[in-house]
Amino acid sequence: MFLFDVEGATKSIKQEIDDEERAEWVRQHEIEQRQQIYEQRRQAYQEELEEGFSRARSSVLQTLNEVQAYPERRSPLLNEFSAFSLDTYGNLFTLFGQDQGYQPTEKDKSFLRIAFERERLNRSHLDRTDLLTCLCLATCLIKVKSPQKAHRLKKVYGIVFVLLSVKLDCVIGQSFQKVVQVAHTVFPGKESFAHLFMKAIERYPSPNLQKQDERSGGKLAKKIEAFQQKNVEPDQSYDDVFRLLFPELFAQ
Image 1 (tube, rainbow, N blue to C red):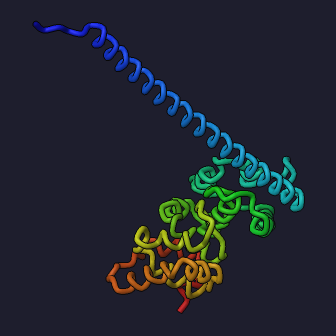
Image 2: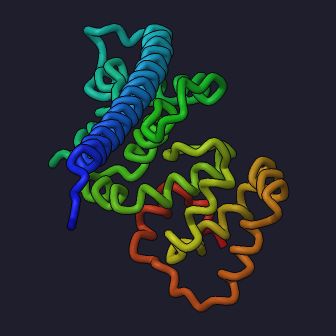
Image 3: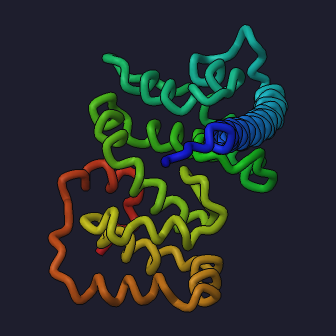
């Protein structure tokens, strides 16, 4: 005769349900914890970013006062910097890429020169669109002189910032902490422009770059050596832009 333990089976099923409910509660609790951690980190990042922008704006306003560029005397470029934000980077391309081109004033040039030196000594923060990067971008856009070349600059700004980082011996246009990290982006990401990078490290000897690479076991030096054994065709289609920005790299 077959006897079925109804009570035992009921307890077993109930235990399975309890285990599943407990497991689901644990999963939901872990999700809530992760969401809470994410929100805390996001808020901390936003606060840090806004603090950086606040310091940058204060530095900008101080510089504007020094060049006597009060609100009623500010050009479109100076107005853009006085309201410095995440949008400034893109707005600079829009300003200089307009049909007639943007004609910088003497106050523009004076502001860029003074603000650059001040920000280089006391950088506000290291976001890739920080004040120093935007000051460098505005200077580059002035140097290329035309809206057509401003649009062309936008297509190669990545390697431009690499070359500037080497030339100025500090990180420009990247969220990295070290110049050597910027240099690593050339191999393999920008190898068609590596010929300019090679000229840059020769023309602008960077103590930081060399020391940082030595500390990392010479990884960059090894990449350069490996690259030199390749037959990579250099991209010279943007030389008109690079010549205006880095004429010394094309000197015979």
